[in-house]
Length: 316
Image 1 (cartoon, rainbow, N blue to C red):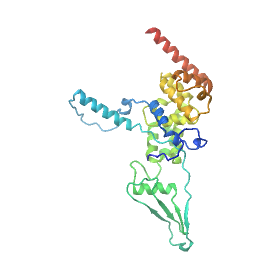
Image 2: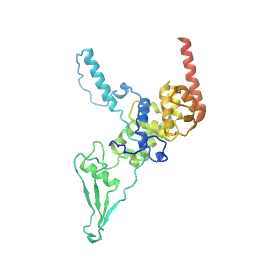
Image 3: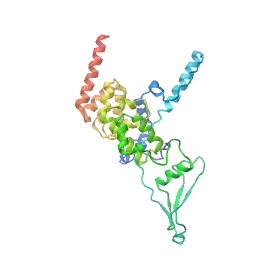
Image 4: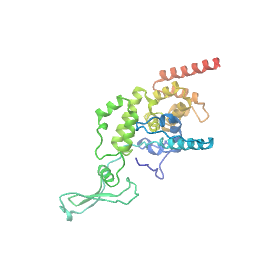
């Protein structure tokens, strides 16, 4: 999956009327990325846990404390790279740009002629690919044609020419029922660009399934947790994820989720009743009383957390 750059002049405030049409600029803003990273977590045991690889003879090294610290820091840095979040984008618009009509060369051949710039190192999204139709029309290649030709000249590891059957609706639902969320999302990242309609369909359906079954913990400490949280805030449906965070005593994460909600929905009531100085738990309570869709469940979660804190305080 290719990194999508932010264009000059893109609005990152979340306040423009066009934001809802294009979530990418605000998603890539520093503040939003910071909040998403905070919520994702960093469970290195989960990230670097056992993998289905062949067993090999273990290697042992004798290290000083300083060398061990350097190795641990290097390992943590490599793990952080695994948390690089995929872009959150709307489906791309079709390419229907005609460059010229040349009827004098109509019927020059029985097949279309495709011309591709194969300059090494050029971005696959910006590579010039044009098609000469048999009627003489010269046009820019469609997205499907671009995907096939880029894969032909510069194949991406793991990406296939034919969309794998796992993304078919019935197979996808079967995998989601088995809670194979990380597998589905990882495969989608390999197979599609982040604005491919199929990528959008698969990822959104996965997020919805997770929300329906409250299986958020499966994505925590993975690169997919941030886009999932952003999707819920974007769709104004963070309640169940917020309840899960409170029940796990992740109040800082819960407050980060509410702050993200305020960035994406700056006109909501709780955004007007809070500020940067509002305490984390108070921020969650204000959201619960003003903008929550499932106020009863949120209130019960907050009450349960406060009772637990009170009992721990008395026991201590």
